[in-house]
Length: 89
Image (cartoon, rainbow, N blue to C red; front, side):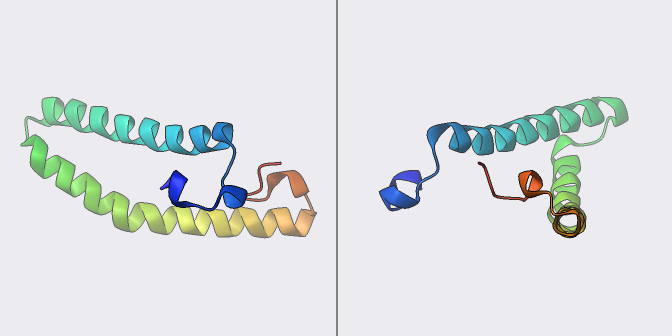
C-alpha cells in the first residue's frame, strides 16, 4: 500500500514504522491473551478467538471512536496543537 501512494503524500518511514508497529504489538497482545485464556479456562482456543474478535470489532471500535472524539474535543477546546490526532509534526 505504501508504494501505491503518490510520493509527495507518503508518510516518512519513521512514522510509517510507528503506525505499523502499534498494529503488530496489538495483534501479538491479543494472540497471547487468547492463548493464556484458553489455557486458563480450558476452552477451545478458536471459539475464544472468535469471541475476542467480535468484541474487539464491535465494542472495541466503538470505544476507540468515542475516545478519539472526546480527546479531540478536549484538545480543540484547550488549543493544544501538539496533541491533534494524525498530526505528526
